[in-house]
Length: 131
Image (cartoon, rainbow, N blue to C red; front, side):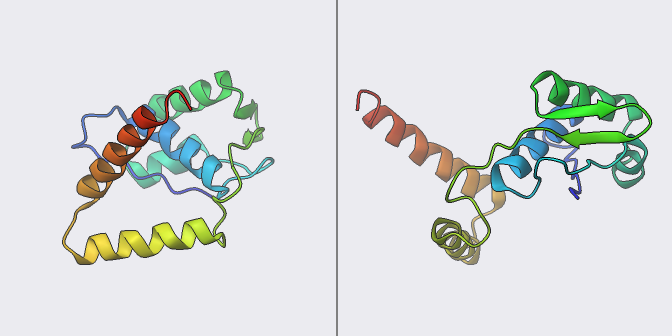
């Protein structure tokens, strides 16, 4: 099951953080088709956010075709976003994990790591746009 973390200082609305964290878990294979998301009540208890915020995120995920809300039963994953190479035991994942450990040991904070990866992706995409 996924544990949502809400960063109140990020400026990103809580419902967007829930959607993004769910999509990330689907991409990484942490959540699979058929898995049940935590109830709104469980998310509220863990994060101290408004229940309507959780429900909005779950509705957005449902509209994207990623989950299905089953009244009285919960919210279930209906589609995966996982790609080969993203699994926990993949060589690419191990390389990224090692690189992140080196970056953190060098003193880079989360925002620094994200900024660096985004910048490298932007340059790569620009260079390979027509390929």
